[in-house]
Length: 315
Image (cartoon, rainbow, N blue to C red; front, side, top):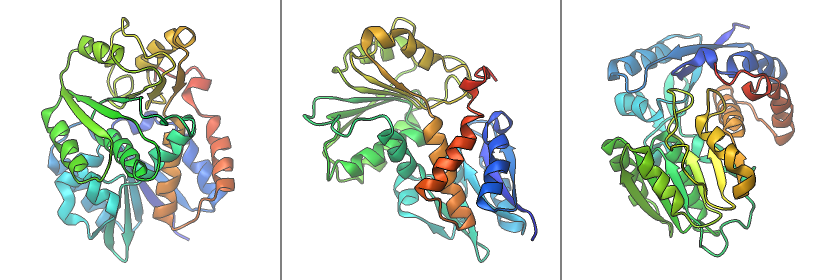
C-alpha cells in the first residue's frame, strides 16, 4: 500500500503539536499516511492558494488537506476549483477540510461542528437560560464565523446568548461575517465593531453582563505576539474565557488567569477544539469513523504533546 499524503495548510505548521501526534494517530487508525505542512503567510496573494490547490488536485499521492488560518482566503481565491461544497462551507464561505473523490475536489467547513463539541466541553448546558448573558468575540475571521454560526443554529432549539458582539480591525472581515449572519434564522442579536485599539476592547469587556463568554479568535499570542486587550482589562464576574490558541505565548489567556480567582472565571484553551477539528477532518479525508471511544484513545496520545504540559508555550 502506497503512503498517502495529508497536507496541512497553516502559518507555522512546524510548530504545531500535530506534526508529532499525527504519526501515532495514523498507527492507531491503521492509516499509511504522512502529514506534510505547507506554510503560507497571513493575507497571502491568491496565487499562493491556487498553487496549493493545484498540487492537491494533481498529485495522486495527496489524499486531502486540513486548512487552519487560511480557511476564508483559500476558498475566496479558489472557489472555482471545488466540485462540491458542503452546506456549512457555502454558508460560512470557508473550507477547513479538502478531500478528493474520483479526482474531484470536495470542500467542507468542519469547524462549525467542531467548535460546538469543544464548547460543550466547558460550557454548562443551562448557561444561556434566562437570556441575560452575551458573547464578546475578539476577531471576526474563520473561527468566529464557525462559532457564531454554531450558536445561531442551536438558538432555534435551545437557550442562547442575548447578543454576540464581534470586533475586528479589518472592515472586510466584518462585512463578510455580517453577510453570513444575514442568511441565518436566529434570535441572537449580532453587533459588529471596527477598531484596533485594545483599550476599546477593554471597555467592551467591562460592560459585559456577569457570566458572559469572551473569546480570542484573533491569533494574537500564537501567529503574532500580543493580546487584543490590555493588562488593565477586567473580565466579567463569573465569566467564561475561551483562548482559541493552544500554543504560543498566549498572553490573553495569561491575562485571564491573573484574574481567575478574583473574578471566578472558567478558562479554556483551544486544545479540545484543535483535537476535534483534526479528528473530524481525518475521518472525512480517509473515509473512516472516529467513534467516541477511538477519540478518547487519540486524545490520550495527544495529551502528551500539549505544549502547556512541557513548558513549550513560547515556541
